[in-house]
Length: 76
Image (cartoon, rainbow, N blue to C red; front, side):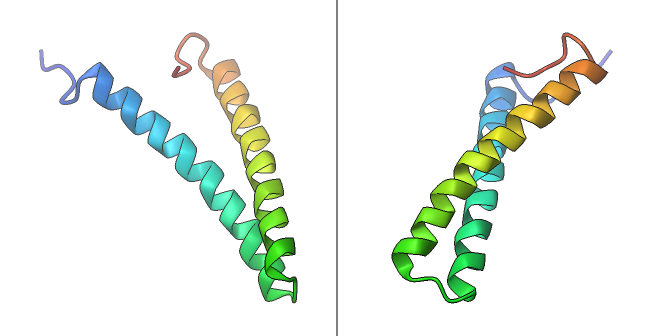
């Protein structure tokens, strides 16, 4: 039988990077939309920070749903 081609440490690193990337994408989206709609740079920065908070909450929500679908498989 063939095992996984990556180690547990590599999978954990990839999961962490994906989580950070997801939150970063939501944060950047909030900041860019605010800036394009005429916000000052400070207001766009505030929107990006708010987007990071929303992205973190969204990530927590999605991981909770995944835990309901497949209990015990939730990544750390």
